[in-house]
Each structure stands twice: as structure tokens, then as C-alpha cells.
Length: 245
Ligand code: IPE
Ligand code: IPE
Ligand code: MG
Image (cartoon, rainbow, N blue to C red; front, side, top):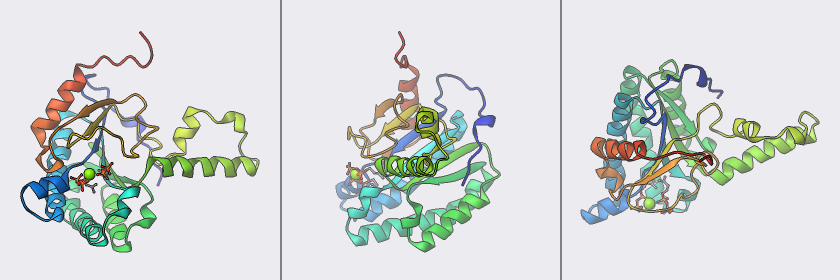
């Protein structure tokens, strides 16, 4: 689905990141600490999603990308995958009217064709119903893996070159970016990972080249508006040099 977003990005306060990306981690540990099944952690995490989307909108963040399910998460027990997919479907069904009325435009990145067909239907319907909104763009990374995304891009470029449509010399950073799932979405300025883990877990490896990274010790279901504000305040104090001096 082509996105044409760059034109209407407002010039905002440089201390507010234009694009925030979040690795929402720690749902399972949150549940374990409370003696609950893991799926209850995922359910509680959905409430954090609602609050963080709303807070981002209020603060003037234009793009929010949430890592909801990775390519590697298919390795989890079938029952947990089923619970996650059921929650995704429920989230989309319940939240779409809210997103519609709150100016949220939904997108999804990843190998969406791997999702169960009922989830795909709900997802495409939510994307369609919110497509004319423009206050904030919410990007859900689903069955997403950055290496897979880069492989898909390489395949496209190789096939265009093999068909004589593309001269390999013309491949540059911009063209590569245009072949990624995130084409037309600016690179994240701030990457947040919750639950204290210090790794990227195959998330947006190309796009976060110059993102500022903030790690929150909180489990995702406990990460709410004040924690987002704290992360953004930390971002505001960083000196982004982009290789310059
Ligand atoms: C993040 O929480 C949600 C997904 C990866 C789907 P986890 O399920 O990874 O929770 P922990 O890391 O086991 O605590
Ligand atoms: C990353 O969390 C994926 C998502 C948040 C969707 P994981 O819990 O899957 O990552 P690892 O396994 O700890 O690296
Ligand atoms: Mg985890």
C-alpha cells in the first residue's frame, strides 16, 4: 500500500521526536510477577498501547511504530501465538472506532500475509477506515523482521536489475529506503525498549541508524504516559551529531 506522508509533516519542536519506535517488551515477566498467565500480560500491554498512542498525539509526535510481533515470535508455543493473534484481532475491532475519531491513521509493516486470515481482514479494514486521518500515523510491526525486510528489498532490486529496468549503479541509500516496508515513513528519531533488555531483536535495523536509544526498566504493561514523557525528555537532552562535530 503506497504511503504519501512526507508532504504533510509539520515542523515541530526539535525536542519532540517526529518518529518514536518502541520495542514493547516484558509482558510475560509482568504476568509472571503477578502469578498470572502470560496472555494476561499481553492483555494489559494493550492498555499501554492505547495510553501511549494518545500521549504521543498530545505531545505532537507524528509517527509511532510499535513492535507487536516479530518474525522470530512464530517460534513461541502455539497457544501463546493463538492468544496474541486473538488479542490483535480484538484490539483492532474495539479500537478502530476510537482511532477513527481520534485522528489516528493506521499502517502495518511486516510479512502480513503470514498472519491468520481473520487478523488480516480486521487489519486491512482498520487501515482502510482510518486512511483519511492525519493527526498521527500509527505503524504496527507484525510478523516483522528487519533482516527479512532487507532480503525482500534486495530481491526486488535484483529482479529489477535482472529485467534491465534498474542499473545497479543507481542503487543508493534513498532507493534502498524506497524498497523497504517503511517507504515514505521518516526514520525513527527515538527508539524505546522496555523491560531493561539492551538489544534490537531484528527491529528496523536500517531505519534506526541514527535513532537515539532509551531503555526503560519498566515492563511494557507498566509503561504509561509519564514514562513516555521521561523518555522524550531524555531524548531532548541528547546531542544528535549525525557524524558531524
Ligand atoms: C513482549 O513481551 C510482547 C511480544 C514479544 C509479543 P514478551 O512476551 O516478550 O514478554 P517477556 O519478554 O517474555 O517478559
Ligand atoms: C521483541 O521482543 C519483539 C517484540 C517486542 C514484538 P522479544 O521478547 O521477542 O525479543 P527477545 O527474544 O527477548 O530478543
Ligand atoms: Mg520479550
